[in-house]
Image (tube, rainbow, N blue to C red; front, top):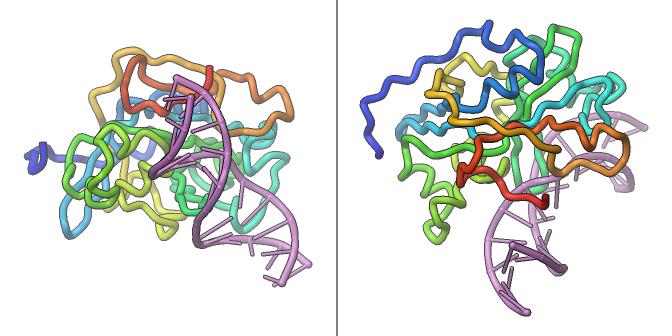
Length: 203
DNA sequence: CGGGTGATAGACT
DNA sequence: GTCTATCACCCGG
């Protein structure tokens, strides 16, 4: 529940220095933590998607498209790439060596600490299950906005912390990407089997 | 100032 | 569970 005496420690920066598919898989089961004056929030990541930079039509950085917006993906692994989708903010972890625009999208997590803050951010009507079971919902619940663009996931107040891991990780095709290109079918979505906070999608 | 960028909430079956 | 109307910000020119 809330008020846990747990201490969350930012993960080492070298955690992010690995191939993007491996990072996406390893992020499942870790904590995402947001420290605020009002309190601390933590959620265990249960769903991610890998975006394989230059060769991936679904990535914003396809073909090494380099703009002010995608610029951060060419930076060091572990940086925060946030982007705005209408009313929603989506969170990504930059991966790959400098100059290689890979990224991992964090799609869903399971609330662990700071539950009252998350509920306030999401609204009292919603069931707990609906607080964080989607990328936009997760950002809103944790209070993450575009101001974290370019931050690093091993720096407070927003960071990844070592979590308990996941029971069993499954893979599948990614969500919410166009129909063009064969990258659509790649099993680059990672999620914990049978976890209720994994976002639902057509099979 | 126009184009690009998918997820959400709620109603309905 | 399935369907769909509605939602806003950043960027480049």
